[in-house]
Amino acid sequence: MSQKNREEIKKRLQQLRDKIDELDRTVLSCLKERLAVVKEVGALKRELGVEVLDLGRERAVIERILAENAGVFPEEALKAIFLEIVHTCRTAQEPLKVAYLGPEATFSHMAAIKFFGHAADFRPQEALLDVFEETEAQRTRFGVVPVENSIEGTVSATLDAFSEYKLKVCGEVFVPISHDLLNQTGRKEDIKKVLSHPHALAQCRRWLRKNLPSVPVEEVSSTAFAARWAAVDPSVAAIASPLAARTYHLQVVAHNIEDFRGNVTRFWVIGKEKTAPTGRDKTSIFFSISDRPGALFEVLRCFAKRSINLSKIESRPAKSEPWRYFFFLDCEGHLADEKVKSCLEELEKLCVHLEWLGSYPAGEAP
Image (cartoon, rainbow, N blue to C red; front, side, top):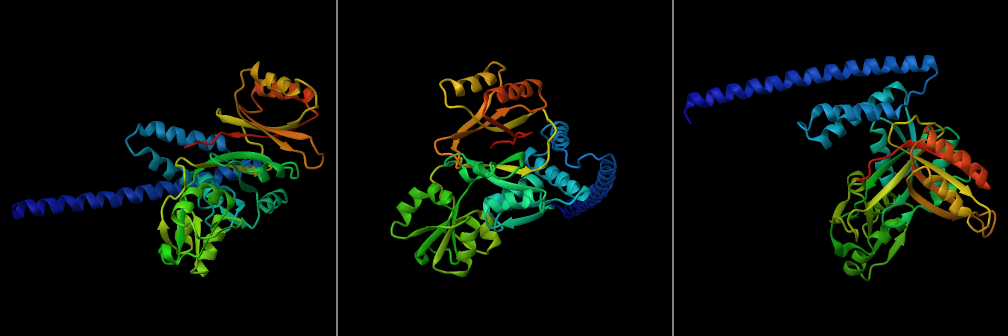
């Protein structure tokens, strides 16, 4: 390549870099302008007494952006960028306090960030019921709690808590679960004990039996608590998330030690809000029925004859009354939909007890 060609390429390269800088300034200017508009929208909503949080509008914004993109910019990256913009602008309208099962870097924390973005004011709680307590007392506006794992099943404590706390389900979010084995050195031979949440230990049982057969395991309240312990005790290893490794400055002994791939946990966003329909929603209820033949069949028939799809049904014992059971049920649709509304009206006549837990935007399962 001649010296002249090299100089022409360098000149063109500098022109492109200058263009990128100009585009960055344009993007920043547009973000500032968007933030100012959103703040004005928030002020007008407060004057009208309208809720600032509008999940349906947020979903529509993301879907419109993806449609206009037409696949040119990588879609997952574009979605992540605009979700963070939307979340940050939402927080500028009205600061959000969000409780989650802590400490920092639990999967609940990851779920909260995924739903609310990084700009929210996250408040870690020591126990799952503390998340319900803080949210019901309105010390936080929302809480994030695990409700179901694709391998281990339902988180019973979450379902049971709804009989004690008068909160609604406002949203759901799915988080892929990947477990790493972490300690201070990154060496397996330094491990004298393994700590983690019971679900994480159960999900890594085969790997532990094969690779650390003589090392004792111990259950703790969360994966992040295990990571915090490992950060101060060189003999301890934690099964926790990659985020926990970064947060607590730990080394990875082994990546992805879960026994089954495709592990996903479903989280509920809880609060006192009523969420407007978005066109792709779920409704959750819990109910009890009389102890007689065909009682449950009559309930299920209410959904079947209206062609309402059920995505989950589970029974839980009523702690106050031995041998009596509550049923938790998720169905497609929103309470504002006529067929869902009429279904629940009919159920009220059939059930001993019926409680609507919320209608909310359906999350995107991986």
